[in-house]
Image: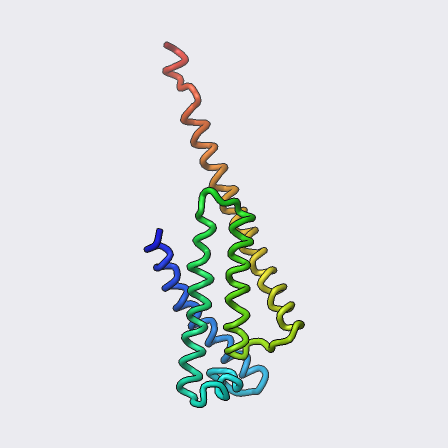
Length: 159
């Protein structure tokens, strides 16, 4: 289980780097008309462009690792889908606030906190629906296999 979490977290780290940096680049392009590698507030905190880019990259990766590594809760057999979804939502939301504030992805306003919580809630709801559909079909398939395995065969009927 630990190696699975580690592999997912590592993949999430790489995806987080890609997505985080892409969002910053696109955001800068559409808001300021230029390509940015980090938010200007991050440069003020780190005092150098290299440090700002490094922090942007590392913290984006960390957020991706938390999100994908934390998705292991969906595989805990004794947890309901609702419980796993709530725990994953809390994990990604509570991780987003400090990372998002530090990287300048959001301001420390109640409005931004609510917006982020709602957006992550919508994303988590979409994940919940996808996982529900996946599990629904898995259960149907297992029930089908069990039904055919437990049904009498023609040979049993003629004996």
